[in-house]
Image (cartoon, rainbow, N blue to C red; front, top):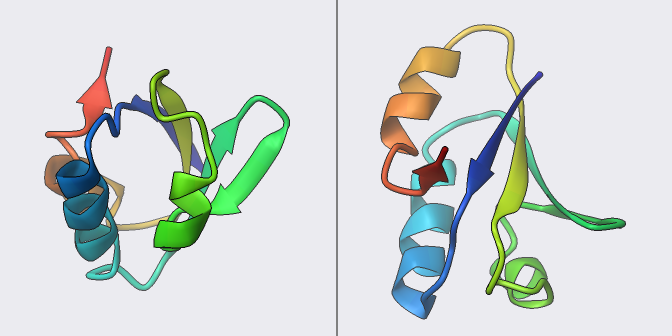
Length: 77
């Protein structure tokens, strides 16, 4: 599992983020405080506080580099 911090501070960013995740047959979780939601769920994402960075857990063994390059626009340091 790999964890990265992401920022989803607009509705358009959330929609494109979910579309990008749908390309991969891997499980993704978003963690905000004590809440853990499925990152492929738009409704779940909007239930989180999007004003702060969120942790994204990527449950993948292989293709992690491909996933990270696709998600680069959302990843923050």
